[in-house]
Amino acid sequence: MVDTIISWLFLAAIAQAVFLSIALLNPRQPEMRTANRLLSALLLIFSAIIGHAWLGLNQLYRIYPHSALAIVTLGLAVGPLLYLYLHAMLSDQPLGRRALLHFLPFAVATLAMLPFYLRSADEKLAWMRAYDGWPWYLALFAVVKMAILFFYLRASYRLVQRVPADSALVTDLRRLMRVWLFSAGLSVLAVAMAAVDAELPLSVEAVDGGALMLFVFATAYTAMRLPLGYRPQTLPPPKPRYGDKQLSTADRDAFLARLTACMEQQQPYRNGALKLEDLAAQVAMTPHELSQLINQHCDANFADFLNRYRVEALKNALQDPQQASASILDLSLIAGFNSKSAMNRAFKKITGMTPGEFREQAKTAA
Image (cartoon, rainbow, N blue to C red; front, side, top):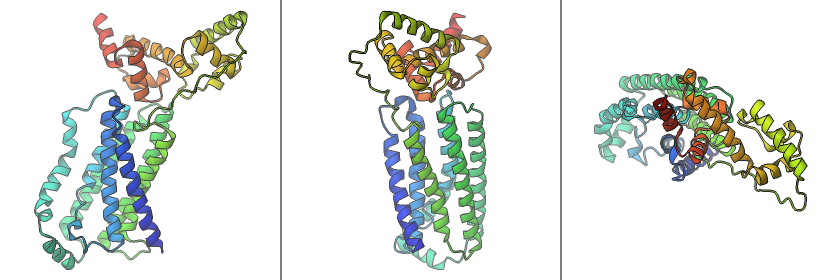
């Protein structure tokens, strides 16, 4: 009964991973193309490993002999893909061709396994029938694979920790890192179970596939809560229908002065989670009055109004020689943007250039 439930959960995780992989390839977000493709590849690898575990859980390896050791080298690509995805999300430095060197162990291991992969189905079936525990070379390979995985997990964790946790994006990425670390721990447990051929209530396939299933579902849950580069940005609220409740000239001028003073002195726009209701409370207005004021007298919706101030703050920071060593992402988070994609889109919309181009232009002018 337990294996049946786990089997169906594995199928659900595979479907979820494939669906997310397709969604990540959304061509309407070119600024996130690299990060999207990396996470898409990572999810596809997990769907393959979970699928392999599903075959084992249902004792189908011998019916599909080409599944023998089919995913044994894929684990070497997991760490690099995770690290490079986070690098693409959190750093303004583009990934060059040298990033391909991260996949060198995976490429070497795959080439080494190629003679086995090219065997016929009958030869692989005979190998499975003769299988009696892990040979020494597979045990050694498993240790090396786990060491490489934890090296990249540590590097990924440090990468996320270096970014200030003052945005919902970074907070959720940190939560995901904890889930991913727990999943890696379960994978290590599965490897240990396979190595010692332990008799436990759950099979090796159930533990290993369950670890990756946890990763997939946690990523999908976060995707529904926050744009991680593969979910379109939330649209700003529609303009309210103000009807006859128009602001008087005196109220409009007083409210505009109060709003301008608040934005320039208190700088509430630096809060990446600022809502219309929050700003209205700070300037002693109702949300309806503030929305009407911004839409009708600032020629912008609430999101664009905040982005004007955030872009201006980011421009000032990029021109500041004392902040020349700070990354563009760090400065954008301080300015109030909660994701790299939102920052790039707003900055180019207002200035006509990317933040990197603006910084270079400022250096040249100086």
